[in-house]
Amino acid sequence: MNCTLAAFAARLTLILLMSVSLRAADTATATISGRIQNGDSGIYLNNAKVSVTGTNLVALTDQTGAYRLVNVPPGRVVVEVFYTGFDALQTPVDVSPGQNLQRDFELKTGSVVTLDKFTVKGAADLETIATNEQRFASNIKLVAAPGENEFVLEGNVGEFMKSLPGVSAEYSDVEIMGISVRGFGSNVVGVTMDGSNLAGANYTGSARTFQTPNLSMNNISRVEITAVPTPSTPADSLGGSVNLVTKSAFERAKAQLSYSAFLSG
Image 1 (spheres, rainbow, N blue to C red):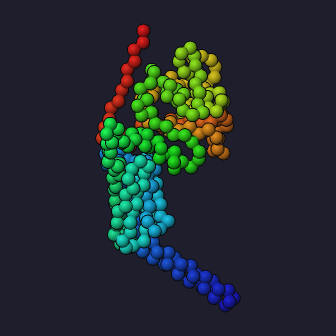
Image 2: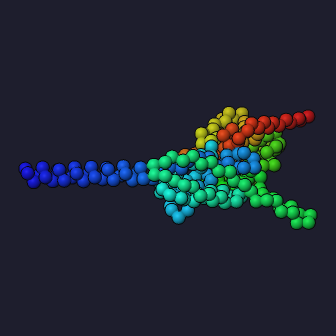
Image 3: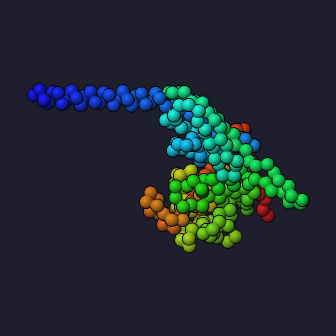
């Protein structure tokens, strides 16, 4: 009995010591959080890579441009921010033990270079966001932003997607009604908006295939096309899946209004 009590007491002492050491480790480190913004347009950047140089501390921003680095060692550290199409930013930050720091960063594109009659400039904001989303995607997918092609025929999102690799259009007369991925019909291509399933009212038949004229291109920020299904992909997405990301006010620092009008006769 004495041996059992002694062993229990030793284990309890070890657990208490480990708890105290873990608590001390928590108070010895700090947290850095903030938001990453395009310094030229004011748009908050999604999936910007924020890291502490010399360590394995890395964080990616969310759709509101927010990031959070935990367990940052105390002292002077260098926070590096990387986003495709922008100049990498390195900023020294003084960190105290247990401190919660708020650090916001603005990224700038390289300056415009003019060579005689040619002008080299950075890509458009939405195109840069699409390129970065595709680069840091967890699976193989194509991400495309409308850019200058936002105003397509009757605002039909299919008019934009038909020019993307691996995508073809399904027509009804001259109007695009659905899209095909990798040669599979639209009935086995899942279409979602911001990750939520879409079911269209098919007025040309009894199928529940989503029809592209039901959605205005003016509301779309970018299009994500996954050609190879993953284990988490619904069974009705045999040919692939399309996710339409809508425009968000949290991606911008100020209000913006866009509209389109069409006339036919």
